[in-house]
Amino acid sequence: EAGVVQSPRYKIIEKKQPVAFWCNPISGHNTLYWYLQNLGQGPELLIRYENEEAVDDSQLPKDRFSAERLKGVDSTLKIQPAELGDSAVYLCASSLRFSGELFFGEGSRLTVL
Amino acid sequence: GQQVMQIPQYQHVQEGEDFTTYCNSSTTLSNIQWYKQRPGGHPVFLIQLVKSGEVKKQKRLTFQFGEAKKNSSLHITATQTTDVGTYFCANRGSARQLTFGSGTQLTVLP
Image 1: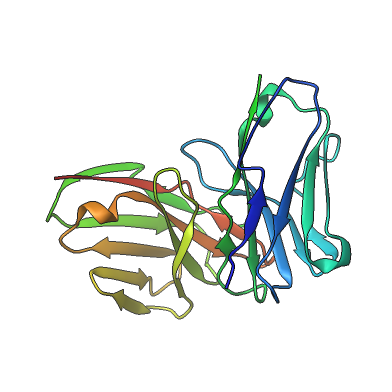
Image 2 (image 1 turned 180 degrees about the vertical axis):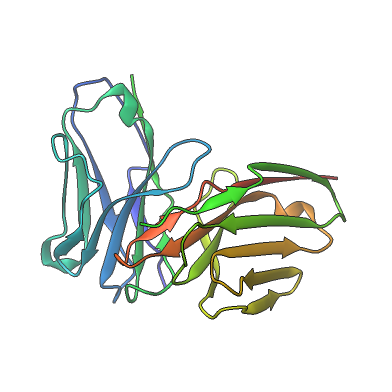
């Protein structure tokens, strides 16, 4: 069974440019998460979806970040415009149910110059 | 979500020595999950603890949940170089979001 797939793995952009990350969760997993991980720190939740509904986006900086999960499967996280401080690894995870274990993708490493 | 504090932040051990990381909270935790992240990798689920005083073992790894459900620990017996990585505890609070601790980075010297 395929795991959580994320793309791109690496992205280097200049500040003020837009960037988008894509995530395909494990088949059948209704819950999808986007986390941000800075070097040497634990993952920080940005947004959680239950099917296509964003049920927890309190930590998402809505002035520049947006996310969508159309049809309750794949998800896209967008940053526009990117700032230097956005350099981090963006992790997507999915779980079969909200209380279960999380399966993480390999992450998308963003570098903003 | 509820904040969980992990100590130590870093730990260097000689191969064969034991290792313990602690996860503490000022409030009662609903449950605790533990994850391992290898250098350059992504977090991988190890175990979930739900019951007060619960102890679970996975080969050389022993996980404990405190009686008051305010702390948890992960103990590795006789570390090996394959144990290298960062170990995170994570708590699913009342808001149902999973909040991660800052992690303990383990280095095993051969």
